[in-house]
Image (cartoon, rainbow, N blue to C red; front, side, top):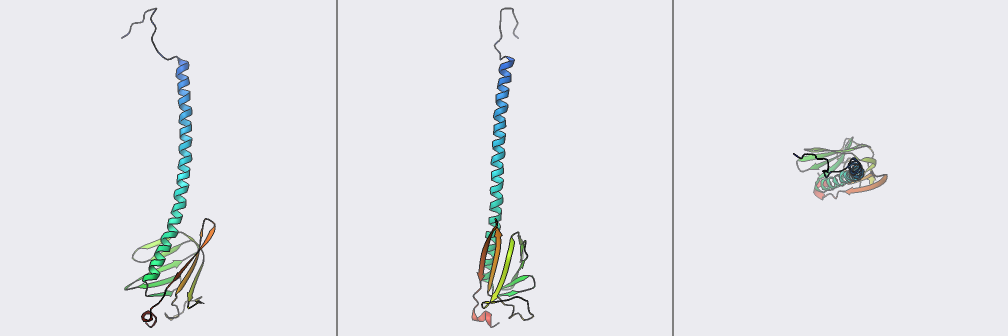
Length: 165
């Protein structure tokens, strides 16, 4: 323990120096906090943008794969049905989402502007009772991404074996 004597001074900071140091640290912490908020906001916007693009890319990838593997593609009341070997995949098209039903159900939150189904360059408007009349060989999708319309086209080339079944 240090004894205080009248002529002896302790080395220490004054109240003014301590307050000045605290004020400078508060200003630096404030700048760091606002920089963190700005970077966090930019990162969140980047992630949201990429999530929308990933949804579009995944939907496109699955439709291409399903069209390639399908033996037949037919129109039904809510969308299309693809026969793939012993299994089948259903796509349901609505204005605000597209659902893919298979072993696993996927929902893609995309805005659909239009869906056109063609069979031999003729548009199929209604579903009929005959499966051969409901067969399609082309699907045109118009989707909205960031206020832009993106057109997708999927085409199925049938073999003679599949056409005569």
